[in-house]
Image (cartoon, rainbow, N blue to C red; front, top):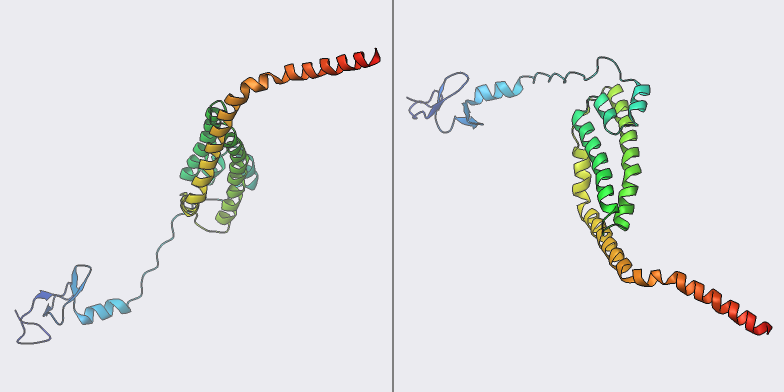
Length: 211
């Protein structure tokens, strides 16, 4: 079989659109499909059909009052706005923080780590609340908000080194505080006796001075 555009040259393939036989010089391979130059030029000049936008999550705009009320329950406001994955992630993070706090507060690695977890509770709570308001505003403006937590994961990846350092410092300070409290506990038990002894000494000195 000979090439349609170069008679006398053996064809190696045919155009997947018009079916003409093509040689090595005429065959253009695009993503595993062979095209001739004429068909490829025509396809490139054709207008690209518009991509249909995804269907909206709401047939009506979400209520601002209901969004405010549900914001007091971490994750539920996201679920109301149609972001189930984000809502479940927020809810799990909040309750895992409480669970970690109950474990750490009664263990030997308390101290700074317990304080860090206590601070994380209101910070996370308020973050979920105000983020829900921002997402509602974006939905009302007609924006399609993806149901993912890529922004949170991206923040952790960008700041993983300082976050790990802060966690290691908190754990180290908690362990050091626990060890120091165990070492100093016998001396701390002597403080009331020392105070009583000083009071008796001062009283004895004052009585001796009067006589």
